[in-house]
Image (cartoon, rainbow, N blue to C red):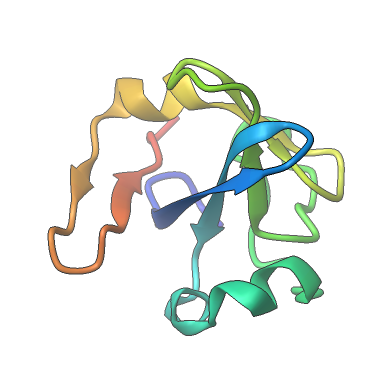
Length: 110
């Protein structure tokens, strides 16, 4: 992924008996990911689709977990080493597609 590339994030939420409400976000650089059913997200071993725009580390998966309940919480990869802070994304500005619920960002040009 190059600086300035477009990414899409889909956030889903459900109740977990041990940790309460859980939110996960998919950072998606290929549109086919967004067409997968929720059940497949957990088990999908996605080939590295992008590199974190700050660390340049291969991501491995495009499944991110929003830990906690605040929008300011960090977004952390379930597998792999890449990390990105949600305030970094929200600071860039985004728009939500009312039909799909997808959130859209453009990565900053460095």
